[in-house]
Amino acid sequence: MPISTHAVVVGAGIAGVMTALYLQRRGCSVTLVDRWEPGHSRASSSDYNRILRAIHGSDEMYTRWVREARLRWMELEQELNTELYIECGALILAEEGHSTWEEVTMPTFDKLGVPYVRVGPDELPVRFPQFDFRKVAFGLWEPEAGMVLAHRAVTETFKQFQREGGQFKRGRVTTDETEIPLLDGKPLSADLVVMSCGSWLAYLFRQTLGPLLKVIRQDIVYTSTPDGDRSFDADQMPCFVDHGYGAYGIPSVYGWGVKAAIAWHASDIDLDDEDRVVDQSAIARSRQYWAYRFPRLANEIVIDQKACHISMTPDTHFIIDFHPQHSNVLIVGGCSGHLFKHGPMLGDYVAGVGLQEWGTAPRFKIGPRTSMPMSESPSGR
Ligand SMILES: Cc1cc2nc3c(=O)[nH]c(=O)nc-3n(C[C@H](O)[C@H](O)[C@H](O)COP(=O)(O)OP(=O)(O)OC[C@H]3O[C@@H](n4cnc5c(N)ncnc54)[C@H](O)[C@@H]3O)c2cc1C
Image (cartoon, rainbow, N blue to C red; front, side):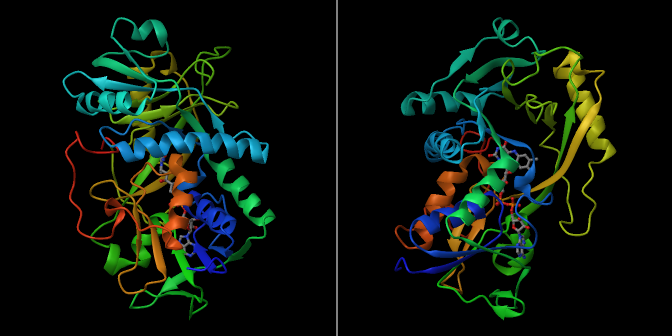
């Protein structure tokens, strides 16, 4: 495709803003469209922060992507002169009797040269005194991991896109019965239309993506930290993934509190018609979790919350593929709860697919997918 291409990117979450920026940097003229202002509260990308960690089980491709994405986040923060990434490390807790995912990660890290330390049960409480390590067989400590400041990353990338000449239009794209994207009732006219609408893709492409995407609600709760106690701050505590419990979280920065999500608890969400407040049951689950894993947080209070959503594919691989009937419509989504960290890599890759510099990888194709055993799962779910 010639670089005089006019591209429309629909959806200004992290996938859309990064794709728009990378298309523009290849010389395309790009219009980004979203129903709301980039960074709005309904998008998956709009929480304060997201974990960046290379651990992806035996999957080498995502592991490489994260390693490269980490460098690109650092470059972007230099370029934009704003903090986007905090390297506080990540600690993955391998549960007694269920540590397949962590076991298969270590040879992958060895092969790709990813720094890590396997921390045994005796050493864990010494190195990470905030945690109670009951039922943990060992920890995988990844020092070159951390958190991306998610909301800021979206809004700052968007501003950069505009500074470099990108256009933005507020509008709601719909699809007709053949799934052609329409704006104001008319087909979107562009050489390339990238549909990066997050979980809403399941509504826009019911025929094509219906069997592939499951939209689920994810409630996040932030807890206060004990008065005067700095040990839950990001310079002293890592991000964590607690596989046995099905939870993960992020230490406090800027006084936001410690974030915890009991992620493996899946329920439905209506993306447009449900109030975005977390359930009381989610708060109760979080409290139970703090008491279990962080005894010093047991009597703390909820200081913030976010009712959010992800769209899962059966194999947890993303979707990056052209619509089967519309050759200029590229669908990007199926985040499966692990897309944010890849942002700059994903945007560059999608731009290359869109401009036919390369084809998409088989894993990203629309098509029949099957669920994976834990030993092969890239997300650990
Ligand atoms: C609770 C939670 C925790 C997570 N933790 C992590 C983590 O630690 N690490 C990680 O890497 N990932 C994590 N993720 C996943 C990550 O946040 C998502 O994969 C990512 O934000 C998805 O970005 P997106 O751009 O595809 O979608 P979104 O951010 O949802 O953006 C989609 C955009 O499309 C727009 N849109 C939708 N429909 C239309 C339409 N019809 N017309 C115009 N615009 C439209 C929306 O308004 C929205 O702005 C987490 C997700 C959740 C919910």
